[in-house]
Length: 147
Image (cartoon, rainbow, N blue to C red):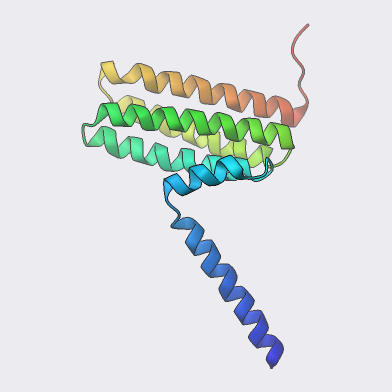
């Protein structure tokens, strides 16, 4: 009976820790990304990028294009950091590629809703995310550059 109490306490503690991480602020995530081990950075950086992508969509919807562009810049920055960390550590390559692919798809959808003037920064972000994906796929499948 006592063993069940210990197991329940451990599970509850784990669940609370996971919940607290989900409620972590963007600034706290950014500082954690800087100090995290290389193997842990892909997950943290992709979470930051996903949050910023959601923020960019909301900002564009609210007519705050300048702030949305800054959020898009963060999407690219943290996607590139996630890709670099995954490639360096050799861990979470597939997960990082999948997340970056989904974000590039969301950016394409977002771009279609924007005015002509607001589209170039989003297209640039799409291109850079596709470059991150290409690098990750090359690392995963051991593809070397052409000679």
